[in-house]
Length: 133
Image (cartoon, rainbow, N blue to C red):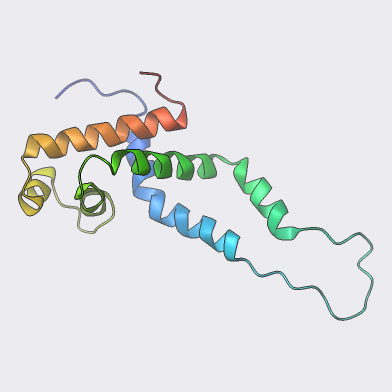
């Protein structure tokens, strides 16, 4: 096994957290804001609360992590039809399967699955701005 970069574990954690981050982002997009019908003055011009929430979310690291993983998944999904199933099995299921078990289940060699994992992590790192290679 080679030497890992300092960001290696961070990228794996970003991938593991992606379903939660995606759900949080989708909740923001689905937010329903209705005006107050009480007739009472609010003291200021009505704004766009959803837009303001999106703008504040886009400045946070969690949002950038979400987009880095989303872009990496889009890039890497072209590798093979089973790539998304590999990500689901390795990162998003509990208990987590080992790479060798996933290779057996998907009918690929363990080395191929390791290469997929490495490519995903490097792509996430590149999209997040942690790696230039």
